Structures are given as C-alpha cells and as structure tokens.
Length: 268
Image (cartoon, rainbow, N blue to C red; front, side, top):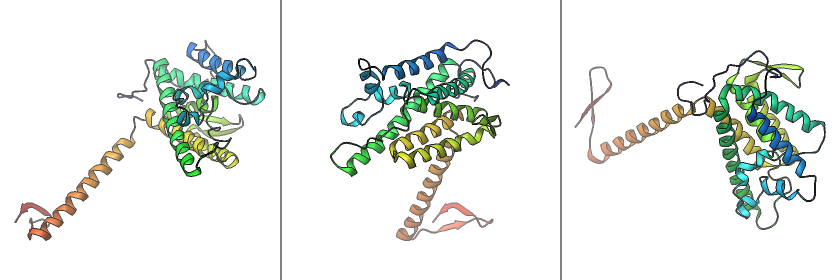
C-alpha cells in the first residue's frame, strides 16, 4: 500500500479491531454512496421515475445505442426487490465500505471504485458485443448483465479491496463461519460463477471477475507488471536467440566459447 500506489489516499488509518465500524461518526462519502444507491433503488418502484434507473443501469444499449454513460453509472443504481436481502446488502456495504474508506481516504476510495467500475463495465460490454455478433440480429437475453448491477458491483469491489488490504483478518462468513479475509477473493469468484450457472450471464460473470482482479492489482501496486516485464524480456531474448541461429545458418557464423564453456561475446 506504500511506495507510490496510485490508490493510496491521504489518510493512513489502519485496520482497527472494530471491523463492524459501528463506532464513531460515519464518513460523509459513505453516506453519499448509501444515499444514492437507496434513492435510485426507490425510484424504480414509481411509474413517474422508473425511467431514470432504467436509463442508468448497464444494458446492451451501451453498444447498440451509444449509452456510454452506463459504463460508470450502473453500480450506483440500486437493484433488487424491496426485502430483507436488499437491507442486508446495504449493511454489508456499510461495514466493508467504512473499513476500506478509512484505509484509502476519500480520494483513493472513489478512484478505486470508479476505475474498477469502468474496467468491469468495459470487459462485460466486450463480451456482450461478441455474444451479439455470434447470436445475430434480435433482442439480447433478458439475463444479460444482471449479475453486476447496482450495489452488487460495489460490494464486489469493496470486499475485494478489504480482502486485499487485510489478508490475515478474520471475517465471519454469513456472520457464523470464520474465514481469513484473503479467501474472499476466491469466494467472490465462486459466488459469481454460481450466479452464472443460474443466469447464463457470461458478460456479468466476466465483469465481476475483472472487478475482483482489477481491485487486487490496483491495491498491490500491479505486482503482475514485474511478471509481464520478465515475460516480455524473456520473449525478446528468445527472439534474438532464434535470429542469431538463423544468421549463423545463413552466413556460416559460429560462436566462440570462452574457457568456462559459456557463449562468448565474439562472432566469426
């Protein structure tokens, strides 16, 4: 989290013992996030306002109608039925959101949330476009992009962020089963896959996986870049080696080895 991480915020509050975050004042950013999700969730149940949530959710209209704003608005449009589960989702969002916000600060929190949102949205849309091309003309399936809508995407990002920053912390899964936080990264992928099995929403599943991967990469300083760099350098070395062999065969060049039986720097 140190050393130039672009998602490191201005505040450095550590992970306290009160994971529930029920003590002290609630950050204004969290109130805003919860208020927007609850407000847009409410709008969908009134005929005069239901058009607004429908316009802001992620739909095939992104590539069919050019509604590009949906790539960044969809996580903030509350979705689901008005029941206990929606309230529970908001509660879990509050618990994880408060911890992540305290670690990243306001700027880092929103930067991570918006960046992961956009990355997941683009990935899902690319899958949707590919599915559209393969399926031909006609309306897309009703289950397209349902897995990653609204507070579910926000929860995915925040849980992945918490699990990345507090890998050895213990979380009570379903408030009963103690599990180390780092395993929640895999659990999120597992739950997303189970959702895919029931909805066949491939675009939504890929979007959730990208959100988890992007969040992990952003908060670990994109350590995979070292692997990519090493891979690139290895491929370049192999290419130069193959080119050298081709030159030797074509021009009769041979390599003079040194006393240690290693390839020497001189060519004849």
